[in-house]
Structures are given as structure tokens and as C-alpha cells.
Amino acid sequence: MTDIRIVTSGPEAAKTEVATEEDSQIREIVPPPAQQIAVPTIPAVSLVMNASDVATASSEPAPIPHSAGRTEIRIEVSDKIEPPVAAPPPKPAELYEPPRAILETKPARPSESPAKSPARDLAYGNPAKAIVDEAIWNLATGSYQAYKTALEQGKSATQAAETAGGQFAFVHRKISDYSAKLENLLAESKATIGVSESIDKLLEQAVSDVIGNGAMSDSEKDAAVQQLGTLQEWVKQGVQGSLLSPARAQKILLAIGERLNWGGPSAVPEEFKPVYRTLFGNMKTAIRAAVPDAQNLQDRLINLYAAKSDLESR
Image 1 (cartoon, rainbow, N blue to C red):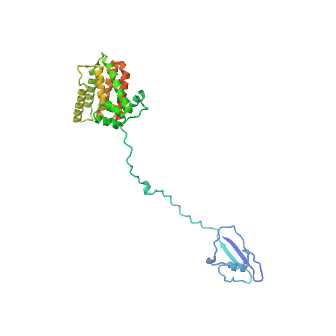
Image 2 (cartoon, rainbow, N blue to C red):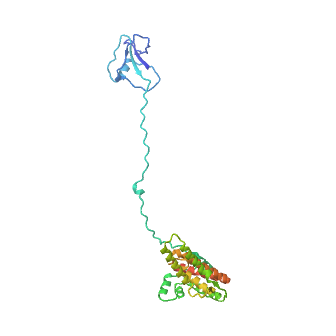
Image 3 (tube, rainbow, N blue to C red):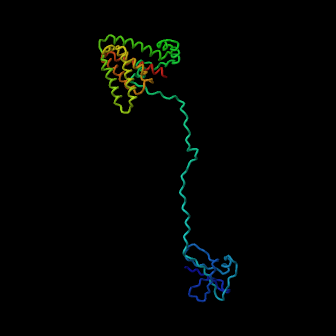
């Protein structure tokens, strides 16, 4: 405890001085608890003032009793300061939650653009290559509606294409041109193509694959085998014996390509398309092996048929 003593003289003296602890004549006046002053921790100091000033500074203006000698006012200041009450820790910041209206997902609007058609199977010809090879990229497409209307009026495909104009007319003219040249070239050939190697073995393997397919039921297998048999009969329609002429093989190739819409959308079930594709490839390879000079004409003709299909599907 640190003692700070303020000593005032009697009425005769005008000066107040600090008393020492050896002065046994000093009368200690301790203010009641209500008058105690809480002072923050500070170095001990001595304050000297007049008794009248002390009385004036007091909260109560009661007169201070005087002794015949000196009057001591001792203010006890504790050097122990209670630690300040710690403020409660701040609550953790709550995660910001956007307004519910922002979180709600609005149903997507249906696309206004038309659905894209399936990718074209280029095994049956490349339309873009035909446009480049025949140098008709700078021509207008032509009127498909006029082409369709002419067909409905009973006109031939060539006549309808001429009515449509543009690439329609050019592609049809080129198909007629290349078809005639290729047919003449193939007709002159004495080569033959084996039916068993190009048709029968492929379909027999397809039937064997169906029978050994554990994922198919017996009824599904029976239906698939029956359809493969029907396909074999359709492909070999008009074929006599075990050999094909290149010209006859070309007609089979064209029939398969037409049924598959030259790689565009068709009514052929997806599970049978690989068989058709292999048959088409077998015919094309066999014709080129029998008549090598036919390759260029055949490629251009197949690509033009694919371009025709592409124009008609737009």
C-alpha cells in the first residue's frame, strides 16, 4: 500500500507540508469508503495543497476539522488494479448466404436452334470432298423446295434437280456423267468376283456372332438371324452362280449405299449397320481389285452420291 499524505498547518500557517511517519502527533483522518478515490496505477507522488482547496475539491462541502496542530488527510491508493473485464470473444462470422432467389436455378429454356443431325458415316462417301473435287463450292445450293415440288409433279430426279438449280443441278449432272463412264469401263472387264468371299462368308460370320451373343435372348437371336438371312437374299438378288461381274458388284454397292442414305440418317437398325458397312466395303474393294482403272471414277461417284444426300437432307 502506498501512502500519500497531505498535511496542512493550523490557522496560523499558510503553507501545507508533507508529514513523516515518525510524527506521532499527526491525527489520521481516513475518508469513508464513499469518499475513496480509485486512481489508476501511477508512480507515487506527493501532493501539497491548502486545506481550503481540499475542501473545495471534495464532493461534499463539509468543513474539515482542524486540530491545534496539523491536520493530515491520507488518500489510500491501491497499487493493485483489477484487470479489466475481458470483452466476450467475437462470434465467428456467419457464412454469407445469398438470397434464396439467387440460389434457385431457373429451368432452362428449350433450345430454339434445331437439333443437329447425326454425324454422317464417311464410309459411304465424303460430301465435302465432292464439292472440292468438282470445284462447285462457289455455287449456290439451289432450291430444295423447287426440287421437291418437281418430284411431286412426276418429274425425274435429274429434271427436278435442274429446276432447283445451283449445286443440286450440278451434282445430278455429274452423277449421270460418272455413272455412264464407270458402267462402260466395268462392262469391258472380263474379271470376276467371288460371291462366297465378298458376301456369304461375311453374313455367315454375322450369324455366328449372333448365336454366340450371351446378352441376347433366344427370341432376339431368332429375329436377328432371320433378318440377316433376308439381307443375304436381298444382296444376292439376280446373282447367278458363285461369281459376280464387276458391273453387277457395282450395282450391289449402289443399292447398299442408297439403303444407308450414303451415310446419312436411314431406317436401317443400328445393330445391322456394321454388317451393311462391311458389305459395302467388300464390294468396293473387290471392284477395284478386278478393275484398277475404276478407282478414280468410283471415288468421285460415291462422293457425289453423298453430296446429293447431304443437299437433300438440309
